[in-house]
Structure formats: structure tokens, C-alpha cells
Amino acid sequence: MKATARNIQHPASDIAARVDVIDWTQVSADLDAQGCAVLKGLLSPDECAALAALYPDDKNFRSRIVMGRHGFGRGEYKYFDYPLPDLITELRPALYARLCGVANRWNETMGIGIRYPDKHAAFLKRCHDAGQTRPTPLLLQYGVGDYNCLHQDLYGDHVFPLQVAILLSEPGRDFEGGEFVLTEQRPRMQSRPEVVPLGQGDAVAFAVHHRPVQGTRGPYRVNLRHGVSRIRSGHRHTVGVIFHDAK
Image 1 (cartoon, rainbow, N blue to C red):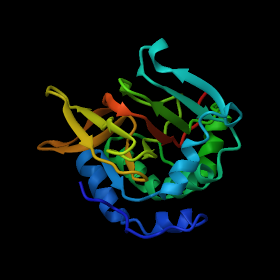
Image 2: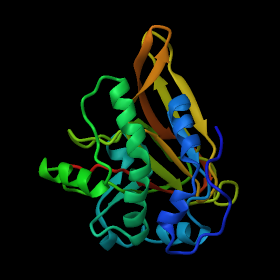
Image 3: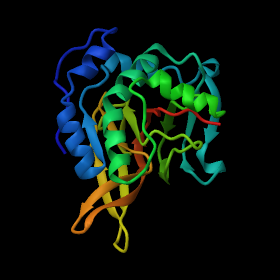
């Protein structure tokens, strides 16, 4: 999988500009081929540290989930409350605008009648009108021995078929292990795994639920799940940018 952003220094307020310089043609190709694509250097180290530092302060969040209590794995995460942090507020619509074309093309290929508007605000209105009003961007925290079971982030009837996870910690310095893992369940075949290497500030865009794959008799639908392998040492923080809200 090819890295898909230029290695440049980012001023604090240029989120939309740095999203624009990503090679979205390559991102689209990677998503079609693998169900995921790396967005290299999306956030700076300072931005990563600032987001991770929000975790202890509960006023930033609407809820806290301890994974072991629900069979989700080990570790914990918190859902941000509205208003979202500025970085997330800027990233969500900028990334959505670039991914909605892929989402619409995938649905057309799979024979799904749902289409997504160009603007994230219009899609959120669709969610909110259906009672999905709770924000879904989240901050995850892992320690030694923690992991995240394979899962899908659906949250309601209205689901945007792509999401983004951003690694805030530095592999090899802050933690060991903790690889992002994607599995693809193909009809009448064994599941295909994909391990996505990320550095601090790198993001991965990936399919939430399913995607089309071209077969010898035409396109067919495959089901995807994602998770995080066991942390062997240190601590790992990640931000999840989900574009639909929850009931």
C-alpha cells in the first residue's frame, strides 16, 4: 500500500489544505484494491500530543467505554461530546468531502440505492433527523496487554461506509505491538487479513462494513472488520474519525 500524502510541515490551521494535497487518486485506488489507504503525516507530532492530552479530562467527552466489560477487548476509549475539538471539527468535513465519491461509487457498484451528499453537514442532518444525534469521533487509550477485537462501527441505520483512524503515538518509542488490523470475509473463501503499518500522525482510511470486489462474474460484496493487535509495551493513543453520528 502506497503512502498518500506529501511529507511537508503543517501550520496549525491548515487542515483543509493538507487534506487537499493528499493524492486522492491513489487513495481511491488503494481503497478499491485493499479496502484501506494510508494518509501519511496527516497530523503533526504537536497535534498528536495535544489530542492525546485531552484523554484525562472528562469534560471533553460524552461517555467512557472500558472494553473488557463488554467483550470488546482490553483498553478503553471515550466518545467526544459536541462541540468537538477544533482539529476533529476541521478534519471531519474535509475528509468526508474527499471520501464521499468513493462511497457513492461503491454503493452504485453493489446495487445499494443510498447516495451521500457532497457536504458533511448535509449528511449529519440526515443522521440527526433520524435520531442519530450523538457524536461518534473517539479517543482510544491502550496499555500493556491491551487490544481491540475485530468489529464494525455502525451505530444506527445511517452509516457512512468509510472512516479514518489516526495514530497519535510513535511506534518503537511510545509502544510496541498494537498494529492496526483489517480482515475481509469473502464469500465461500477464508478471510483475508491486512496489517497496516502507521507512524505517529499517519491515518488510515478504511471500509466500515463492506465494499465491492470485482470477480470473474462481476462485482460482489465482501464484509470487513477492523481491530488492534496486543500492545507489548508502552501506551498507544488513537483518534477515530467516524462520519455518521449515533442513536
